[in-house]
Image (tube, rainbow, N blue to C red; front, top):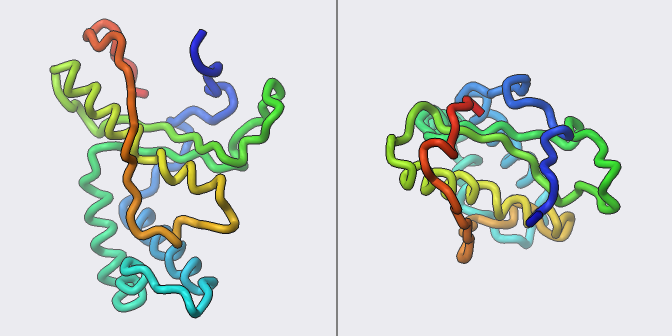
Length: 168
């Protein structure tokens, strides 16, 4: 077997998790940005997103809410408190991030397009997970732009029968 066993028994089912409204999402992100910026060292350059949030919080929250409302992928983040202990692992889960995700509606009838959407969605949390391994020296508030330069996924079978019809 290639890879590790699935952690599906360690996390809650996606249907049982809270899905924030666009307004709740925007308000949470805004509060995190403001809180993180308050603890920044004064000599540090203030990232543009923090400047924007500080300058006009109401407009910032509104634009984030609008952006969230049209996202093509539904992400459900599992908090550290929701992860059950993995007795089979000698290492902790400090640097892991568990996320359920699915498309909002049908993407395409073309399996290759669906595979591309899966690659896009899987890249969404790749770098934020790696930043966790550098805490407390770094945090997400220290980084204004993140992109992955080399992210490879091998799809061995993208036939319609392999995709299934599960909602999650």
